[in-house]
Length: 55
Image (cartoon, rainbow, N blue to C red; front, side):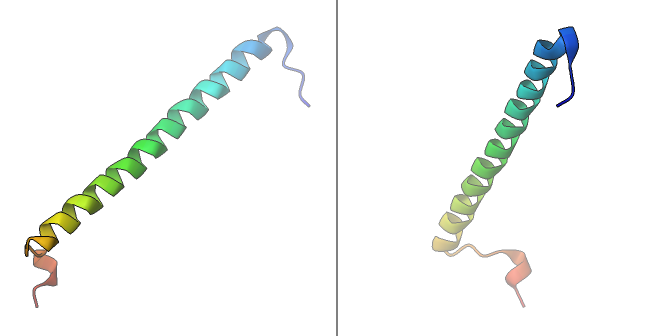
């Protein structure tokens, strides 16, 4: 393992902070995707179709 010296704690917290932020962004993207899919399903259930499906 690389010796981090006196700054080891700072480096560890920096990596942990980045991991936390990236995890939050991934979670937010997943939740937003689910929300959009639910909204599209609700619209399609009401008979509203996407323009791209018109043929």
